[in-house]
Image 1: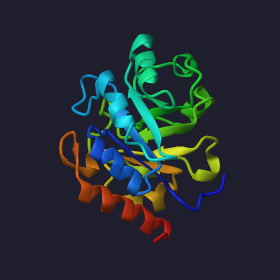
Image 2: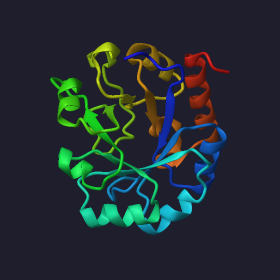
Image 3: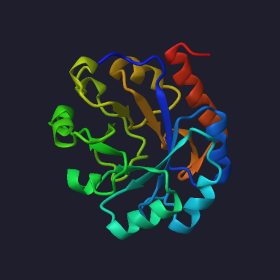
Length: 214
């Protein structure tokens, strides 16, 4: 598995239309909408369509769930029919695949967790998202030890790196883990649940600098 030339960028936990639009302007690859009610970044089903209307062409919407009922997921998919799914709870491989959609499977990189075991358990995942342990739905602002990730030559599934990333450390994270993409939430927030335009710009610039792209 060879490293890619450009690290993909996902900004998660967007709650305002203007920030969805800005993500498109900045060339972000994907934006995440949190569909978990306990999160400060929760987007109710009736607002999902409003946010999705601001998506730029070729920007992928991602709907994040934690042990959600099937009906809740189907309701969200009706609002954003072309969305990719992201699962952060105790969902089984069958739970993740039952909707016939591409999905990301989050892995909390606690002590003793082997990402390669998760690859074997979730062979149908579009990618695995390695996150810091302890955050039920991401955005906790915590970094885990990237050296615990298997080398890129050992991986069989694309890796998305999350967990405490911001403009100051994402370059080091990319060099250490060589992920297919990076996922940021709290690292680009002005306050909990509200993104900062300036921090979004700085994060994208830092990723591009790490890739050697102006």
